[in-house]
Image (cartoon, rainbow, N blue to C red; front, side, top):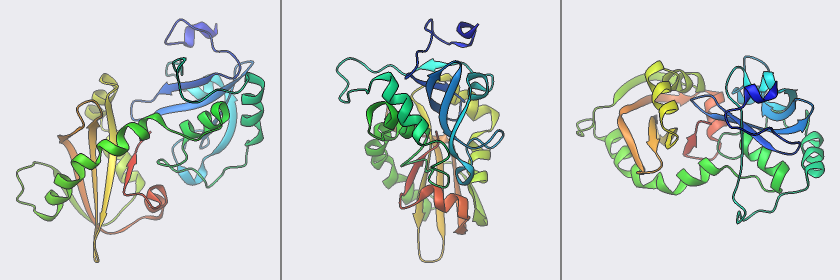
Length: 243
């Protein structure tokens, strides 16, 4: 029974936006009926690998991977008007296999795609909520990067290069995953600061409610260069949210 998969007492309808909480990020898709979901993801085992991600169609079971299913519900006064379900589904199907190499955590992720299908606008609620607030912590963070004696205890790693795998491995640590799952206001964020001869990458858990970074759950990489996958993930941005 499909109801057994739900985290809330509702059965999805064709055209609904679905999501599941992976702990480190939320994954979104569009339900097209008959137990099928269209979503922006990499192949099995590589869901978050940007270079491999494309618009794919899978079963709800494969979409969930054992996690609970939620239906995205915006209030009646939401600023965007949804398309009719048939149009939502047609829009989703029109992009199948058409977006490989275009995935970007900050500008075009699975939530951006699902909202484009439903509302015609690419937006990510978590990205919008954090983008302004993050400015309040970036100043103190960058001061710390240049002044190692600053009174903040953060794990520092000096490495010739840093890649997306290093970032994801840090946030997948069991204690951090448990913390992220316990509070929906917590988000894993990464800030980049480049100088002439080195790059600093600051990873931390950010509380979007209090607009503070949790210093005790933070890390700084100092590297000579960024690996291609991380450089592509940042694009022209200095901050990304892992979703």
